[in-house]
View 1 (cartoon, rainbow, N blue to C red):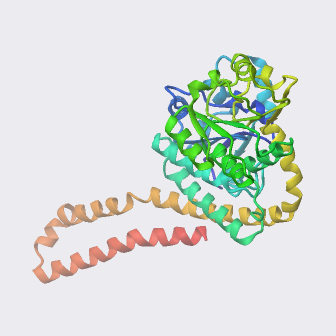
View 2 (view 1 turned 120 degrees about the vertical axis):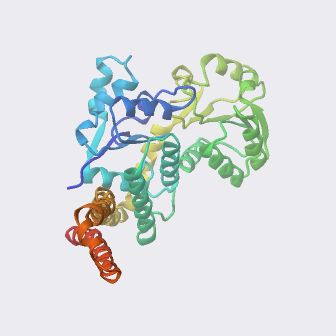
Length: 409
């Protein structure tokens, strides 16, 4: 039986994606991974990996003693001690937990986009690999999650190669762009892009392909704003200039890593002061949301958020349902293969001390137990004994490993 792995996750399948911000790990000095490491040490967990996307919060755990692994309530209460009972009541309805082989299959489903908001989009695999890299750099992961990630990537590649799940791929960013254009946006309408990350970069390229040129890019790091503005042929601004922006705009697209709303009522009031466009369109793809609720609900604002994109994505799923079934067969087979490899790896780790122990026995036999008898032998006999001992040493190491592999397969 495969033991030691666990996944705790909140996704678009279990809650309104606009509520995901409540489940995020609060940052310490601008880094969530430092806080995750504190949790790992608090619960004495061997390995943890943390993934956060616009529609998913996921923790992957591994511990050689599964009884060390915390429940979802215990884990989240460590990061959110300020939450009241109502939060944990919602938590019980929103959190999904997987253990053992089901945890492995879920990770493979995530990697291959079978469990994605937009089935067939490849962005999640990049995000998963980046999350593993970041978790690894933060000293959160070890050999067991490394092995899991290797097989997750292999599973995703197999599914994209052997099914049509990735045909006509549609990402969250492209779906949001289509929804933006459906509001009646014209290529001459001015647009504000707030944030210069992966999502807004995709949107900028899509807008450029449609002929949009009047785009102003705001970002905390000005050089990134410049790079993205050059890509689309727009103008760059530091994020600090946003509240004082006076030019008219028709659409505002925001996606940053900020933990609090950027488009507050005060900021919006300044942005709208000399703006004659009505209605104004706001696309908010951030988790937590970057647009304040009061602004999103304003009468003159058409608001598009990730939850709305999720509903739209459901319409695109029918095409891929048959391919999802094929992918699930591959995921199950890959999980069973991983199970075998994992067991073999555990045996290898357990037997890593075997050669040294056998060497110590041989050394003691030669220098202590049979020291007197060896001293009475001639050189030729000693050489033969040493050759026999070396042969036996190799066999005593190799035979257990060979038997163990046979049992697993």
